[in-house]
Image (tube, rainbow over all chains, first blue to last red; front, side, top):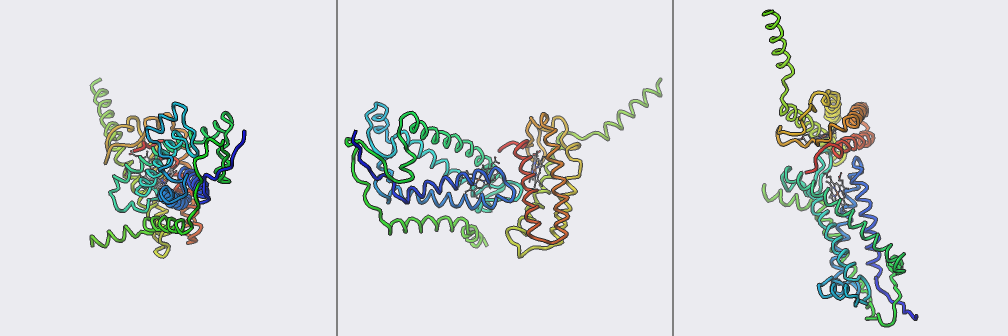
Length: 227
Length: 154
Ligand code: HEM
């Protein structure tokens, strides 16, 4: 059957995806090993925060398929999908559900991580804003969330390989090249063109958020208020 | 006969006083011991890693000596008695019940703790901050391996 090549993932999105893989795998390994690697755990955690902020903004300002409105798993879309009537492009509704779950768990890992401590020699950048006993509890949640993350990552990878081997649909290549191949009836519209000024704007915001949290700015400011 | 009984009773009494180490005492002292360890690792982290400009050689030597002394303190034998996986010291204990099945492994970790803190003492004396930092990393990983194994996740 005739297929058309279609651009689905713009390059900032692909860069985001593979940097996220790097950051999360790195954060997982450095978190488990501890010791001197806690420095790197903090840096990779910061990188993950920046990437997440980027992704959220890109979900509104990116190209067509990157935008949340175009793949948000609404009940209607999920029903269509389960009836087998979904022929869209990009994330299918169930895939989208797992993507949002992954992003949520990562966000929760970051929110807990910045307040956590290990009782040895490692604290998140906002640890000093809360009581030690609360931080201890939050550190426990951080560890439970790691289990949740492992489950979701496992699901994500299994799904990709299920598509590759059983459904003969390679989802890895589009995440590298940006292009997928469609049947003519699937064609819904072009991906639009990428706006570099928007990209720069989003990157600036994302790095500022990381800088504000990690530089000690918040802690110093609150300390100055209570003085 | 009477004398023998009195003798036995007084032995029992003396023994019970010597050995009287109610579970909660063990837990409380155990928690205190680790809190002091954490105080010292926190100090080293601060002076060696986060704010090297505040490095005081004497304080780091003292911290390393304290850590080593506590690691050598026979705490596994004296503060991890039967029943100490339940009860309240300064706060409810976080010792996992399966500690009692993993005692060999924990003993190994504690032997490593002794070795790493002894090594830390040696490098602290040299004043070589980079070497202290790297040895301190090994010590931290040792503390963590025990927490991962036998400390209850909050
Ligand atoms: C990318 C997301 C993250 C992942 C996958 C992750 C993973 C982990 C892992 C595997 C551990 C070890 C848990 C254990 O020993 O059972 C850990 C501990 C820790 N993480 Fe993260 N982490 C993430 C983000 C962060 C962030 C953003 C921070 C902030 C600096 C942070 C701070 C900490 C702290 C302080 C601990 C020690 C907690 C404890 O020992 O109880 N993490 N993390």
